Image (tube, rainbow over all chains, first blue to last red; front, side, top):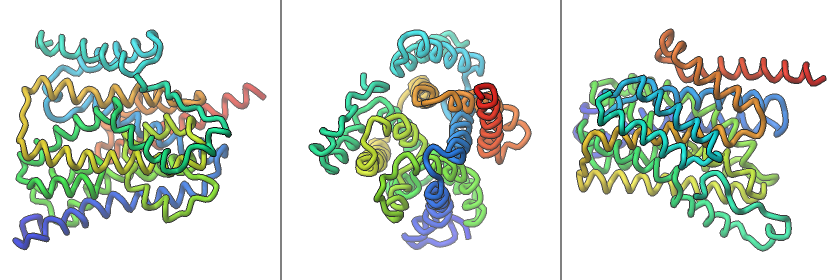
Length: 116
Length: 252
């Protein structure tokens, strides 16, 4: 059974539910069951939060190092440099997300225009 | 800009004045924030990706509303255009979405109130994806504990509904931008995650987890690309717990 197996109007929606919604929300539900057993201020919560935080850090690294779409053609050094400048601007200029985003975008856009 | 300082440190006296509904509205109002805007730009890109791959406007909108995880949606469209079977597509989506399990498990103890029912948490869990997770982890501490569920309901449901509509609208208008605009927009997401997650830390363990996750990801991606995010989570989590033990030993 593939996306094109049936021509009925409802088939793509059933396909989305079975191949997309179910294998996504099932992990959320399992997360609720696990999270429900974790007490706040316990070591287990520190551990679960550490795993989740490292995982989101992995998502950040993925978006910077291996982006898809329009960013994929830019240089990896430009992206790392822009992210580093943005993060330094965040740490040094009063910890504002917007300052960091603007600093990173300035470096990135200048780099893209110069075809770096 | 209200991105890291949030003007609502409530005293107990205020809590009785502000109802659940007013906290729900405060959550809804977060749609007018920088992170919500960044997420919408990512969905502008998604609408174009769906249309390029022959997924219809209604189907793309349905995907955003029911799956509500952008990586899973992109994987699913990739599987559809690659002619995967239903099972093959479901396995590919599972590998992308399994990361939600530890994320939700860490989120629930922060969000639930003393009397929150499990069914409420199960229903709200659908709205937890990376952006809502980062926003919640950053802001919950400024919100009275028994109001956090109402606040997140407003935040999460509004984000999901709005972005589903954004995809429908952008698809309908078939809006197109020069590639440099997309490149600049796509860079907003990692910068927002990087800074707001760093700023959400209440103790050093979060910073250790972030640095180890950032550093380990390229190596693990090289070794095991299919499981890179999940393994990065566990390896970074192990490094962090090692640090926590070490720091305690030094303090004792």
